[in-house]
Structure formats: structure tokens, C-alpha cells
Length: 343
Image (tube, rainbow, N blue to C red; front, side, top):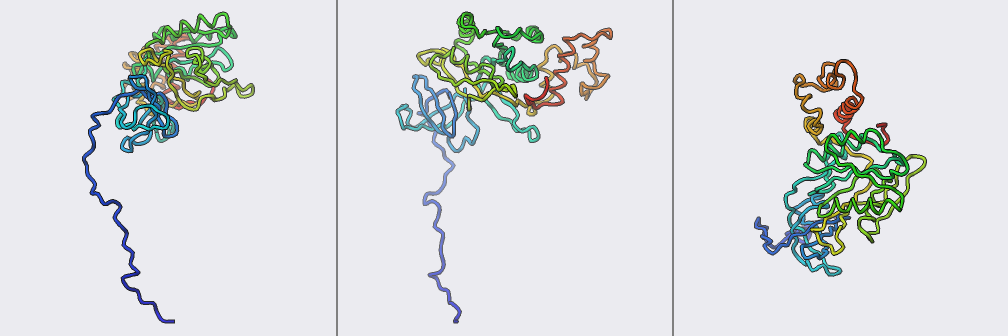
């Protein structure tokens, strides 16, 4: 068999990817309009414009993944009519005044932003089923104080069990405490009080699954249709009913100035590994001044730590102060959180 002779017809020349030379010039997008992001789901972002138009958009490639979250103020170009089947494009995200973030990988310290531009962080906990865990409440408060967000501690199901004693400790930190009952006769007045508090503000509701966030959203925003669930009798954990964060208008005419309530999925893990330990200490205003008098490089866990003297003046331990100190040390030593851990 003779050896095949190759000629120029066997050579394949790969065509150029583009006939147009690339340029670094980018459009100015002077005609872009601003809008508020109300939900982000599978590559599509729902926004509402200043003219109350609901627009579906996708992110520009330059913005990268995870660059847009609920609560962001963005610039839109393209078809911003809001008509069915249209798709606009997000070309920029305005600077955020604050954000709520958590660590999703404690080892790699990967930070994931949940929402942005928040006025109130409403920490929802129930008196029972599931029982409140102060460890998760403290983690939310650290983020709130660090980002300059006003915290509100909302306790549900007060007709089923009394308020835990440790809830009163948060009043000394300037945390507003609000309660709601499951009784129909009392609930209407409770919801009206909460609606008045959140009106004209952007608030995010966070907490365990099963504490009543979606039920409260349905009361605050009629016809919102948020799915509610029960608590598993075996594990004591709630079932997830929200798969992604969504901002719902407190005003029936979709006026952004009327305020927004953001419902979030039930959180079972809220890590703080992305925060510097000094920022965690600064969030405990009643402990930070004492911690500043400790020896350099104090881990705040050794016997010589000044915080021990603060918690046990004269050798007699103060129960409330001891609990606060234990909470701080738990955040410094175990900055990730799992709801299965005892608190």
C-alpha cells in the first residue's frame, strides 16, 4: 500500500472568530433608567422602575455572577416597557449603602450577599416550635450593627409559650422588641403595629424555617401568596417554603416610597468567618470597651482576660453578663452556625 501524499487541500485553516476588531470603547448608556431589584431567580432579575413598571432583565456579562441581589438599585437599558416577553439588560449596580452577607464556606471564607440597601433587619423568632436560639440572633445582630442596619427582634407565637428570659437582655442594646400572637383576635392589631413600623422603609425578614416569616408577609402584603409550612415534629426544624429572596411592596399601588418587606428562605447556617474578629467584638457595645483594656493579642478566652472580671465583679458571677460573654466567645471561636448545635 502506497503512502498517502498530503497536499494543500488537506490543510484546514480555522476562520477568525470575528471579522470586527475588538475595541475597549464601551457604550455610555446615557439613556439607562434606574430600577429596584425585587427578585433574582435563575439568571432572570425582576425590577420595578420609578414609573412602577415591572421589568424582567438579565445581567451584563461584565458584571459577573452573584453581582446583583434583591434591594440593589440598578441601571437598565434595552426594552424597559415591561411588556410580556421583553427582556432588558442590567448594565450597572449603584453603590450599596449596606448589605446583609453570610459565610457559606467557613474554610474558604466565601462571602455571599443576601440583600442590600436595608433599613430594618427584622429577626423573626418564635417562642416555641421551633424554640428561639440566641446564637443565631446574636449572629444577625452582629451583621446589623456592623452594617449600620436598625435591628428589630420580632417574636411570634406569644400565645403558645412565654417569652424567653434572655430576650429582655437585648433591650439594653437598643434592639426594638415586637411580638405577635397566633390568636386571630389579637393578630390584626399586632400586624397593624408592625405595618406602621415598617412603612416607607426597606426591611428584610430573617430567621429559622417555621417561625412564621411567610405567614407574616401574607398578613403585611395581602394577596402576596407566600407558601407557608409546618415544623417537623421529629427534627423540630421548619420546612423551607421560600426558595429565594423576594421584595414585596407594602403599598398596594406598588409605590416604592411606601416601603418593602423582603422575605428570605429559612436560614439554617449563618457564618461570620468573613468578618474580622475585632468587628465582631465592636458589635457587642457593652463588651467592646472592656475588651479594649485587655493585653495585646488577647483571644478573650484565657483566664487573664478583663472580660472575666467584668462578668464576675467581686468574684460573684452575674448571670446576664456571663451569658453575653459566652455568646461573644462562641462567635469568636465558632464563627459558623448550624441550627442543630445547642445554644
